[in-house]
Each structure stands twice: as structure tokens, then as C-alpha cells.
Length: 139
Image (cartoon, rainbow, N blue to C red; front, side):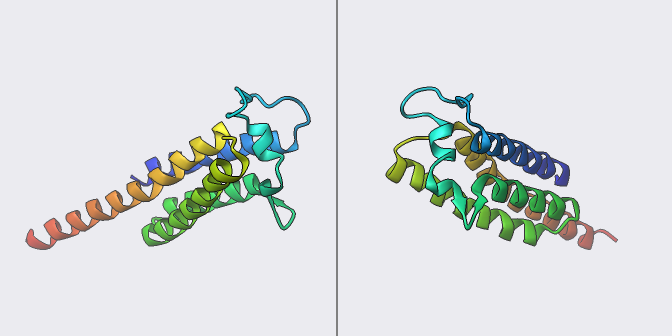
């Protein structure tokens, strides 16, 4: 299960890397689909930077931390980190929907990934707890 979590975290880091590339790009965004779907508008907005740090870079670092914690079998820490990431992603989703009125495809994919990670982690916790209960009753 930790490897599945690691794959999700790595996928999140890659998607965040693509968003970071758009942030620094001066060309047309590859996910500029129409007036409602444009990663360039989102990633060049004032909301794409916090204290001089691109939000996409924060995403990359967050996913890499989750990756490391997952591989280290730190299930509770993965849950805390992924829930924090989910909260941040939901806040950014609010900005896209209610403030900018434009969606970033990479951000929506990242939201799906960060939403899946705590679900997978909780499932992992239940599987491990079930194994411990079964082993406790076997002599």
C-alpha cells in the first residue's frame, strides 16, 4: 500500500511541476482550453504566489514530503500532511471558482490526487489494524 501512496504522491509532484512550468512560462499554456479552463491565467495570477514562493512549488514540496513519509511507513504523518494539503487545495479551488472564475486543469488533477491520498492512507491504516487483530488471535 505504501508504494501505491508513493505513486500518487509522485504523480502529484509531477502535476505540480507542470503547473510550475506554466507559472514561469511566457508562452501560451498547454492547457489553455477556453475562457473557463486556462492554467496560464491561474498560474500567473497574484494568487499563484505566497510570500514570493510559487504555489506550485509548495505543491511539489508537499507531495515529496508525503512521498517520503509514506515510504517511511509514517501513516499518521501522511494523514496529517495530506489533510493539510487537501485543505490548501480546497482553498485554491475556491480561488479558482469564486475569485478568478477560471479553472486550471493541473490544479484540478492535483485536487483529485491530494483527495485520494488520505483515503488511501486511512484504508492502509484499517488493513494494518486488521492484520494486527488477526495475528493477535493466532497462536
